[in-house]
Image 1 (cartoon, rainbow, N blue to C red):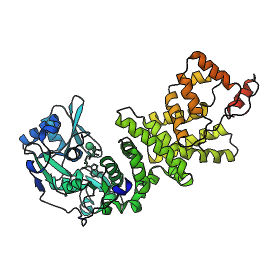
Image 2: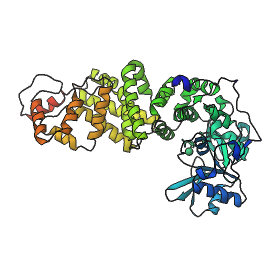
Image 3: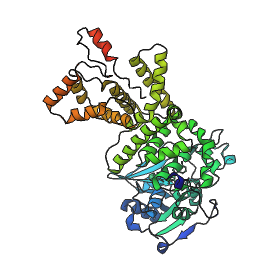
Image 4: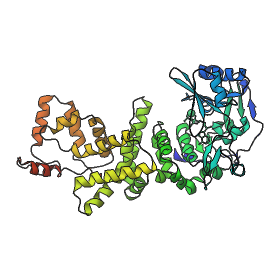
Length: 464
Ligand code: ATP
Ligand code: MG
């Protein structure tokens, strides 16, 4: 798979040229017809055109339709400004800080309408209020409207720069996108180095589309990625959170992970886990791959996926080293785990802003790993009632599938859930006073301080 993804195209490489006149594909020259597209999106295009503006369906929906994939959503590009669009539609809302866009609502369907934008060259920007770059050339704001041709050139990949007019049923292709779709290639428009400098997130997008579409990444588009990967460190953490979710909730997370590691993009996103991959490659790789394979399966089955579980798995392999380091400084195992958890999550949030509503369950899932071995008395039943039990149990099975030794704890919990009450009582009785690390049974202790101590004897959730 990977080899295929990175194959370069066999015929001589054609860099996307700046074209002022597009290649036009008439209705007989491509497979699209207007009836396939969202009725609402087509109506918007028609209404804008009737009002005298240029308007097209653009981007992912045209690309996906040409590939026989059902598009996630339908985007419209137009010469009308956001205010002009809003004036045409009652159900329109102007949104966006980075870019001004219009959302037109039809019940649950939202059609995004964007005004043609230009990617202004650096010299023109010195005194501009509309567009600015930082020293490394990254575009910070770009609300500069432009022509259709300019709009095509500022898009990221050739396959994302196709414009479909549902009225004439023609495709306008400014960047040889149809050629690249036929040859299943992700290719940046323009000079790859410059395009990554302008927006390093394009490196992640290249990987996302390669995995989603099972395309190769064209050679010139691939080459600058490794040397430029560290530019991702400057991307705002909130934007990276959104991008990382798209990467791992696409239904192709396992392939995406392989590509990110291979192109050295994983390191700037998850520095601590990247270190764990270096120190314990087999365990770390297996645990993350297993988590992503089951995530992909759930996405394909239409089952809900919680980002908390995903991040819990992506970060878990980095935890033991930290906990052990704290222990070596004299901290007892449980506080050391808690401190390591706190450190790891807050460090990670500097790169990828994981919202609190997810960091809390991440901690609970990890905390559950400490509690699952402690089953005596009423503890097992209390754990079963815990709202995070299922996630914690699934996480335990994940750790086992990556080769962690837990003394068959996963199987015990599987059995326990399937048992009736009296069988459960027997299972607890069979545990006796045996402590969770499998040591010989001890006599029951009364003193609460001693009971507390025996809690810390549980097998560590250190992950190794
Ligand atoms: P998906 O199916 O994942 O939504 P998409 O192609 O629609 O794929 P979006 O992120 O929704 O991707 O972006 C819509 C379009 O906007 C893209 O097709 C591309 O033309 C353009 N675009 C988005 N992000 C960038 C970027 N960082 N640089 C340049 N163009 C971009
Ligand atoms: Mg889209």
